[in-house]
Image (cartoon, rainbow, N blue to C red; front, side, top):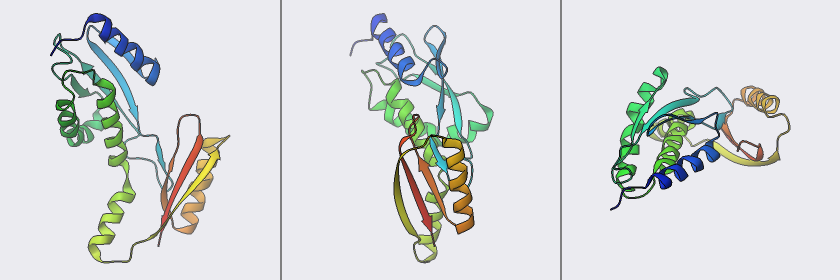
Length: 183
């Protein structure tokens, strides 16, 4: 395996900056970067436990032949990071010899969504108790003009009807999926 050249490393940094934006991804020193990872799903019935985590990434001179060191920077994310770090490290081991930071950040994002998913835990408890499974529905909304107002309205309706679920959206609020679950 061959270490990444400085040009390859710079291309990876430029790509990550363009994907995550300069406000979320920044270089803080030689081979040291910081990034905010956000849970972009939005629960209808409550705010996520941990909406975002800030990670610090440190690459060595032998990157990508060795995995980068990822550290959680926010104190309220320490428990999450302790839980998620093993999965990230296991995935990193499968990517040795290739640029991997983006892939690792995607794993972190998936784990953050899983961490915040209350409906997943509720479904496991219901199945374990032998109770009937709740009814589920998935809706597609083609766009939201005022996302915050619309999501608050969905939360209000969900509370009134005793429903749970999540709003799954991209940054531009196009192709918004609403997952609803209730008994």
